[in-house]
Amino acid sequence: MESIMVIISIVISFGITAALGFVIIPYLRKLKFGQTILEIGPSWHKSKQGTPNMGGIMFIIGITVSFIATALIFHFSGGNLYSGYMNDLQKDAKSDLVLLVAGLLLALGCGIVGFLDDFIKIKKKQNEGLSAKQKTLGQLLVTFGFILTLWLSHNTTWYLPFIGTVNFEKNVVTGVVFWLVSLFIIYGTVNSVNLTDGIDGLCSSVTVTVAIAFIICGSLLKFAGLEILAGALLGGVLGFLCWNWNPAKTFMGDTGSLFLGGLVAALGYAIKCPILLLPIGIVYVCETMSDVIQIGYFKITHGKRVFKMAPIHHHFEMCGWKEKKICVVFSLVNAIGCAVGVLLLAFGY
Image 1 (tube, rainbow, N blue to C red):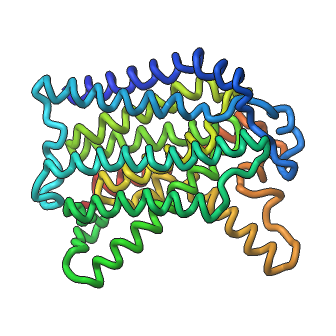
Image 2 (image 1 turned 45 degrees about the vertical axis):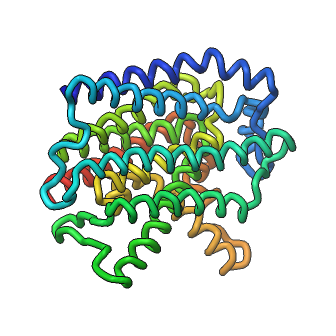
Image 3 (image 1 turned 120 degrees about the vertical axis):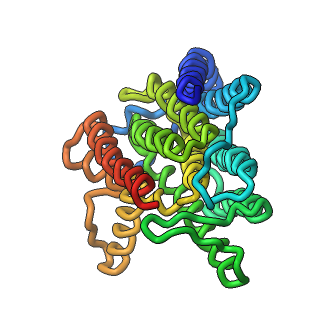
């Protein structure tokens, strides 16, 4: 029954997201909500000037509606959204539902921050929206609310592959570690996904592999709610790819990329093993590290660069790779990372 629900979740999310393109994209174009292209970017990106931005609204609606609708259908059909969770990882299995609801709210909160950023950019007709401090503050406030929810619901036990479980509520020290590490993981994940959204279809196609990985993780854990949420994510990004594949008819904007980042981070916490976000989101990690390395090396050497342009997808663009090739290769690389993450979950417990 769980498999049927996952398929339903994927289909609903895909259908809503893809269909909304016929309504939202013309509306964004009518409002002149077009993307402003940076002068420092690849010169050929100038042709994308004016492409409707904030298209991420499409899959935000699709994913949210699909998850809620499918979860309700499953529940009223007698299904158990939280059954069969791994042995000692949760004393009260029902609190696993808190992870999913709080996770979706985390994603929506990040999406709102992104929406404000995009809206200001569009109104000012420039590529600067919220200031770095404002954007960081908004993300940290939303992240703080998510972590506080985990703490109050006692969702503070993590599974570490080949090591065992760690409960962070043992004392003050472990509690502080939980908060600080969680802030770093969530904030880092959200912004890493945001950095990956730099060319047509890249963030969406990479996130397809991530969603599939979490569906498999949910199946291994017999956590139906997780499977349904990950299925909604898969359907949403696939539906968006219908409009975002090169040449893109719309961009997701920070509205979409920050939402996806929040949801990916939340799914890492739903499996109670957020460190698996490293292999499962290996491309996100590489995108961020390439940016860090580039900036650090530039400052140390007073102007020299490691990459032709950062983040790393732009480096390959400058090397002559087409956007479609980058999407395919990066997705394949991330699929390998996802396989490693799933294997660690399956055999490392």
